[in-house]
Length: 105
Image 1 (cartoon, helix red, strand yellow):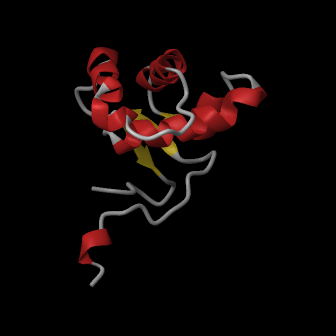
Image 2 (cartoon, rainbow, N blue to C red):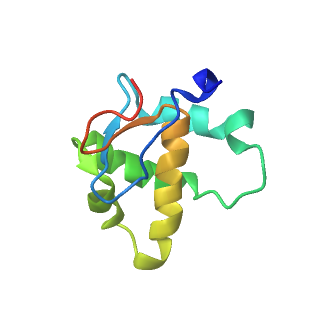
Protein backbone atom coordinates (compact mmCIF):
# COMPACT_ATOMS: atom_id res chain seq x y z
CA UNK A 1 0.00 0.00 0.00
CA UNK A 2 2.97 2.36 0.38
CA UNK A 3 4.34 1.92 -3.15
CA UNK A 4 2.83 5.24 -4.15
CA UNK A 5 4.91 7.01 -1.51
CA UNK A 6 8.19 5.09 -1.82
CA UNK A 7 9.99 7.98 -3.55
CA UNK A 8 8.92 10.56 -0.96
CA UNK A 9 11.70 12.10 1.11
CA UNK A 10 12.30 10.37 4.42
CA UNK A 11 14.48 12.99 6.05
CA UNK A 12 13.84 16.53 7.17
CA UNK A 13 15.72 19.39 5.57
CA UNK A 14 18.57 20.49 7.84
CA UNK A 15 21.40 23.00 7.66
CA UNK A 16 23.69 20.09 6.66
CA UNK A 17 21.53 18.98 3.72
CA UNK A 18 23.56 19.24 0.52
CA UNK A 19 22.21 21.29 -2.37
CA UNK A 20 23.29 21.07 -6.01
CA UNK A 21 21.78 22.24 -9.26
CA UNK A 22 19.99 19.44 -11.08
CA UNK A 23 22.03 18.17 -14.05
CA UNK A 24 21.79 20.56 -17.01
CA UNK A 25 19.86 23.16 -15.01
CA UNK A 26 20.31 26.84 -15.78
CA UNK A 27 18.49 29.77 -14.24
CA UNK A 28 16.60 30.31 -17.51
CA UNK A 29 15.17 26.78 -17.33
CA UNK A 30 14.56 27.12 -13.58
CA UNK A 31 12.73 30.43 -13.99
CA UNK A 32 10.45 28.96 -16.65
CA UNK A 33 9.61 25.98 -14.39
CA UNK A 34 9.05 28.11 -11.31
CA UNK A 35 6.84 30.54 -13.23
CA UNK A 36 4.63 27.84 -14.74
CA UNK A 37 1.02 27.43 -13.73
CA UNK A 38 1.68 24.25 -11.76
CA UNK A 39 4.49 25.84 -9.76
CA UNK A 40 2.44 28.90 -8.89
CA UNK A 41 -0.86 27.23 -8.11
CA UNK A 42 -2.18 27.75 -4.62
CA UNK A 43 -2.03 30.66 -2.29
CA UNK A 44 1.10 30.24 -0.19
CA UNK A 45 3.79 32.86 0.44
CA UNK A 46 6.41 31.90 -2.14
CA UNK A 47 9.71 33.70 -2.00
CA UNK A 48 10.23 36.11 -4.89
CA UNK A 49 11.97 34.68 -7.93
CA UNK A 50 14.77 37.21 -7.38
CA UNK A 51 15.58 35.53 -4.04
CA UNK A 52 15.42 32.10 -5.62
CA UNK A 53 17.74 33.30 -8.37
CA UNK A 54 20.23 34.44 -5.72
CA UNK A 55 19.96 31.09 -3.92
CA UNK A 56 20.40 29.25 -7.23
CA UNK A 57 23.53 31.30 -7.98
CA UNK A 58 25.06 30.08 -4.71
CA UNK A 59 24.21 26.50 -5.64
CA UNK A 60 25.72 26.71 -9.11
CA UNK A 61 28.99 28.02 -7.67
CA UNK A 62 29.48 24.46 -6.44
CA UNK A 63 27.80 22.06 -4.06
CA UNK A 64 26.55 23.90 -1.00
CA UNK A 65 24.63 23.11 2.14
CA UNK A 66 21.30 24.61 3.08
CA UNK A 67 22.96 26.36 6.01
CA UNK A 68 25.65 27.93 3.82
CA UNK A 69 23.06 29.21 1.35
CA UNK A 70 20.86 30.66 4.09
CA UNK A 71 23.83 32.61 5.50
CA UNK A 72 23.68 34.82 2.39
CA UNK A 73 20.21 36.08 3.34
CA UNK A 74 18.97 38.31 6.16
CA UNK A 75 17.77 36.37 9.18
CA UNK A 76 14.15 37.47 8.68
CA UNK A 77 14.11 35.98 5.13
CA UNK A 78 15.76 32.62 5.85
CA UNK A 79 12.55 30.69 6.55
CA UNK A 80 11.13 31.83 3.21
CA UNK A 81 14.32 30.96 1.35
CA UNK A 82 14.48 27.55 3.06
CA UNK A 83 10.91 26.85 1.97
CA UNK A 84 11.87 28.09 -1.49
CA UNK A 85 14.69 25.55 -1.67
CA UNK A 86 12.15 22.79 -1.10
CA UNK A 87 9.95 24.35 -3.79
CA UNK A 88 12.89 24.31 -6.22
CA UNK A 89 13.61 20.67 -5.34
CA UNK A 90 9.97 19.78 -5.96
CA UNK A 91 10.33 21.05 -9.53
CA UNK A 92 13.74 19.42 -10.03
CA UNK A 93 15.63 22.69 -10.21
CA UNK A 94 17.96 21.55 -7.43
CA UNK A 95 18.86 18.20 -5.90
CA UNK A 96 19.02 17.67 -2.13
CA UNK A 97 21.45 15.25 -0.51
CA UNK A 98 21.41 14.59 3.23
CA UNK A 99 24.56 13.36 4.93
CA UNK A 100 23.38 9.77 4.39
CA UNK A 101 23.11 10.05 0.59
CA UNK A 102 20.53 11.18 -1.98
CA UNK A 103 16.96 11.66 -0.75
CA UNK A 104 15.53 10.48 -4.09
CA UNK A 105 17.39 8.59 -6.79
